Amino acid sequence: MTRSIPIAPVRKSVVVDSDARHAFEVFTAGIDRWWPRSHGIGKAPLRESVIEPYVGGRWFTRHEDGSEAVVGHVRTWQPGECLVISWEIGADWKPDGRAELASEVEVRFITESATRTRVELEHRLFERMGAAPGETMRAAVDGGWPGLLQLYAAEVSGVRSRSAT
Image (cartoon, rainbow, N blue to C red; front, side):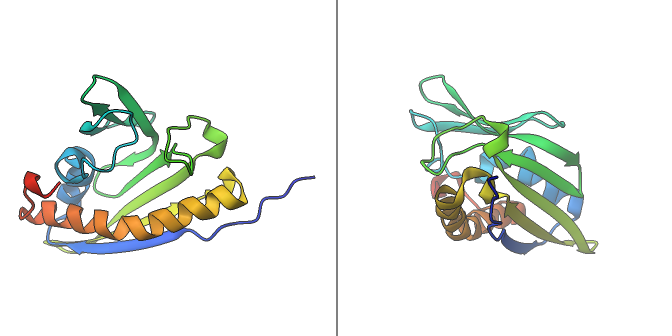
């Protein structure tokens, strides 16, 4: 019998000056405005990031050569409240569409006031990848999500420029 040992989830948060619905929209429909061009998993340079707005929709990237790479699939779509999306990327940073190996990213949008939202991100289920690859991915995203959330927060506040990518 094979047992997997749980790997601790990565938890990060940021507070943005926005209502929850707008914060959700910038995270999802606006992902191409804040996701860095340097963070693509395709073979060619990244041109566009897209999250399709429904359960089962793809999170994917389009590349300069016309190809697409799937990052994951939407599992929960609750505008202004919660987004859960699979992370179908192997520890080698290549697409891996095997659902049984996918980790998962949950993003919650928690209203603190009419104009402030706490965005809590949890990236979990690394053990699905296996012990060593799961720990490798966990360490990488633990260091990566803080910078990504800062780019996202800057976009929400309207201070981010495309030249930052």
